[in-house]
Amino acid sequence: MSDIELERFKAMLRDESIDDLLTALAYKMPLHRLDPLIIRGRTEHITNSELIESFDRLYKAGILMTGENGQVVKGPKWVEPEFVKTEKYFPHPR
Image (cartoon, rainbow, N blue to C red):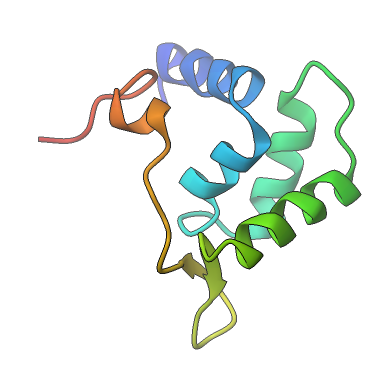
């Protein structure tokens, strides 16, 4: 990851809601890596219980669900967060 990409990633972690971050990243990245990234990447203090509450909301809403092998997958109501749609931090690969 280049320095520019790293700065964009840090800005995304800092500026986007926890629910949107989990919606965009949880199915792509193992939770043991995602958890510390979000906690350390925020300017305000985030606890594990806040992440768990966010996951609970997303699971109950059908946005995320558990796949066959226990991994997080997109749920039936998954919708791409606005910051991803608008390519705010990273352009989609063409």
